[in-house]
Every structure is written in C-alpha cells, then in structure tokens.
Image (cartoon, rainbow, N blue to C red; front, side, top):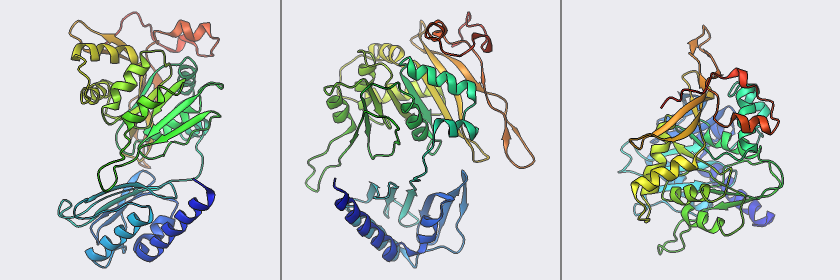
Length: 377
C-alpha cells in the first residue's frame, strides 16, 4: 500500500470520526484511555490504567445516531455492517481495533468496543521496569527464545498476550526469517527480517476469503525459520503444531485460557476442529511434543498486567494427560493500602533443559531453582 493511499484512508477515517463519533472524540484523543466500550447510545465505559470505569456525561443522541456513526466508520475502512451482516470486526487506519454488534443480537442497542493502538514502543526492558516480569524470569525467557523453544502465550482478553508476544519475537537471534500471521495486524516486532501476513474476509459474494489456516499453509512454503501466529483461534492450530514438530524451532502463538493446562486443552480443541482425520491420541502426542513452554499472563484486580507463570510441558502421563511443571510462578499477592498488589513471579522448579542453557553460556544460575528430580503433573 502506498503512502498516499494510507494518507487517503486516514483522512476518510478522521472525517468519519469528526462527523459521526463526536460524542466520544475526547475519549479517542485521551491517551490514558486504552479501550472504549459502548453499550447502546447512553452507556459508555472506558478502560484506564487497567480498570473499567463509566464515562460520565458522554452519550449519543439516540440509537439511530450511534448506528449511523458505526456505519460511517465501517464505510471509512471499506467494510459494512447491516441487518444482514450485524457484526463488524476491523482494524482502523490508526491501528486501533473495532468490534460492533447490532440489535436485536445486542439487546441494549448497538454495542461497540474500540481497543486503541498506542504508538509508544514498549521494549523488553520497559516491560521489566513496569513490573510485568522480574529480571531473572526475563533472562530465562530470553534464553528460551535464543534456544528456539516453542512457546504458547496464554491469557484472558486484555491481559497483554499480544504485547508479550511481540516483545518475545524481538528477542529472536539475528539472521532468521520470521513470518507473522494475524487476523488484523497488531504485533509490534523489532526485527530485521520479518514478513507480516493478514487475513482477508470474504467479499459480498462470499468469495475471496483468506484464513489464518491458509496463511500458515502458505508460510510453510516460504522458507520460514519461525512462524508466529498472533492468535490461534481455529483449525490453523493443527498446522502450527505440525510445523513445530517438523523442524521449525521457536514458533509461537497466543490462546485464550486461564492456566497452562487449559491452554494446551484449548489448543487441542482448536486443532480438532479442522478437517484432518488425525486421531485424538496422535494429536495429544503431537501437542505434548511441540510445545515447550506456556507463558501465562494475567490482568489483576489492581489493573496491572503481569506474567503469572512460566510452565514447561513435560509430555504425557499414562492416562494421556499433559504433564506440566511451573518453572516460575506468582508468589502470594497481598493488597497494599493504595490498592496495589504486592508480590512477584518467583523461580520454582529447574527446567529440564538447564544443561542446554549452561552449555550455551547463558547467565542463568541453576541455584535459583528447586531440584527437578520430582516432576509434578
């Protein structure tokens, strides 16, 4: 896309904002607001510093005004939303994401969420300084990236999965070819040789769709060293798992789950949704072999987003259940007088690849971990 085309798109979008989203223009311009949630014309909430609060005195005139605004925004990015297609999911020219659902599916009126895109660049060092990850855990993840471990980043909506995935991608050693695949481009990656792929929805005639699964299949033919899937949400999970098991070290993706075992089960369920006739036993064995680490991120009650645990996948037990072991896990969190939670991620159990870390001269002391002679499921 040329710079002139991007400028034209931005101009149309900005006009749509000014002409139709006037009631929330101040929220869009407010850098302290990370997400805007519209639950019908007269109920608007925002996320500030990780907490959701009601935006007082901000509302649309009526449902027709809100509906017209969303129609205009959709049109400004070449999409449409209507009674026949009552859902909109799009990336806006400024990088923000918008999702909308129309009545009668949305009973309070047109419901919209705008997740804003911030241009300030987060670095791995900033991430540590913000308290999202302690130094020793950051060093461990850095080493895991250099060793080419396959990593699944797991967490709930708004927990910071995409942010962490982008930061980890930036820790890949130089000289490799990375292919990043997303529904809508969100990942910020600081790396020399990276190719970005984005899906495409079907047109009005129902043709021309390009899915994440299609792009994963194509990427395997484009000589990638590592494949990064922004969010694994469908049958592309199977292709990613198989890529991890066929020599593509250091692949990554994110899934929605609340704990490491749930993340593996979620990945399994997504892979089973494909057309492949692979047996459940074979699939479970492939997942246990493919995934080395699950990094769980969480959004806490004080609004903070932190890494909750770093867990190694150790295989399967005799009942074909995933065996996992926390390498780092969150300590007890104690609420302080100011409402902040005190506690941090702490080393727990020695990883099985500790010798590999030492053989590569990485400055991670074995002594910080407990003995790994007993592996817990």
